[in-house]
Length: 462
Image 1 (spheres, rainbow, N blue to C red):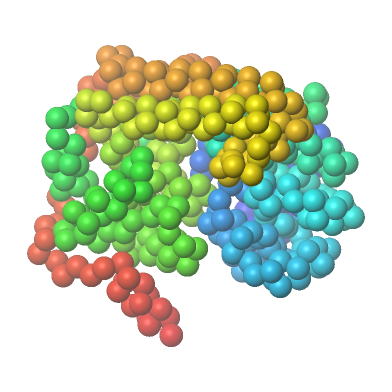
Image 2 (cartoon, rainbow, N blue to C red; image 1 turned 135 degrees about the vertical axis):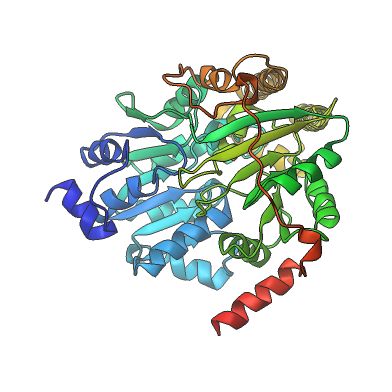
């Protein structure tokens, strides 16, 4: 059966999107693959279709619980046996899943959960079709100083007898590509890459002495749906409180529990909220195609993260806009995070000298475990290199803010790409003016809280 026939049978599509068929063919031939495909190109199909054509369970390593739950929900709705093994399960539910692994076609799991010995030993008994790392840039960007278990995925793969592996991401610089390949893939892996350039997203930077005033002015002119990204939970909640009087708005960050996060996603996806204020905990894999604008209220820490976040706009291909607000010294928040990392590293070095792991923080405990695996000097060296790289990335981000030339060309150069054709709606430095709409005066509308909206949603479906 031709792949197009299988595509029609399982998904109802007549043709593949760019890059999908090449990824699938390589996997089915037994090759490891690094797939770098932009947002809205259907990356999940790249592992789902070959899994249907191959016996065994597919393990999908995913960074966020919300992302796992979205994928599982979509698969279950198609009567496909899929499950997420995460901290939201009770002990009894977790045991049930572990003793019925052979019943599932897809297992979604975090790297932390997958590193547990019991889970690894039970998975080793299974026939594994594919080992998939979704949002694979996290292997490099979230590794040593945030979630060190990502750096252990290569060892997990080896323990599971090197199943065919797919690393998927929307963005990866040459350095990140090399890092992913070194950690996860065989030397003869296949690279399937498409441009990170999202031509339908226009790029703007607005420097201001009063960010909140600038934000409120923007919101009067931009029609949604839209996302406002902030660097911290505190800023998210502060903006929400200030804006909720005038807008159908919700907020989202990692401090919310699972049910609260699910509610917010449902409301936003159902267009019962016009705007979501969020940290970068929101957005990966979100199934909403009509987001019209992304506003960054705080400075992102890297071009890669910025491109990931603005890529959530315009998945339907329609014109969308990305606006980065900058106020002098916005980068201070990242210097604060840097100091926190340095304090953690300093404490870690002291703990190594005293061999007293019981006094360590959660992150330091993970570094101690990692040092037992790869060596203390290696961990310290990796932390130092990572700190230097983060500093360089922040410098690049500041250069983007102060750029006088084409912003799109600057972004593409960061990914070792050259612009083939400049879109008509490119960026402010090419003379583009922000497209505004006649947005109704939301202050004259009766507004309700997102909690009330959620209750109405369920009453409507009763």
